[in-house]
Image (cartoon, rainbow, N blue to C red):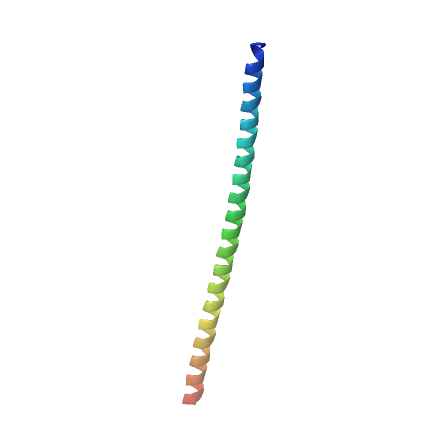
Amino acid sequence: MCPMKPLSHRFQSLIKLAVALLSELENFKNKKQIGSTRKASEMKLMDDFTEMEKLALVTSTVRGVLRKSLQKS
């Protein structure tokens, strides 16, 4: 048996392991980006909902004020 063969085999195994780890890291980064994009989308949706609630509150307040002023007239 050649003494270089086991070293070559170990080296190939380390390269395979490194490639697998880099692949896993890339998958992790992609999932993290997708997750942060989804969170940003959810935050925008919540902001839109808050704006709609504010608009509804202002509209109902204005209607109430107008009704009261019309009733006094």
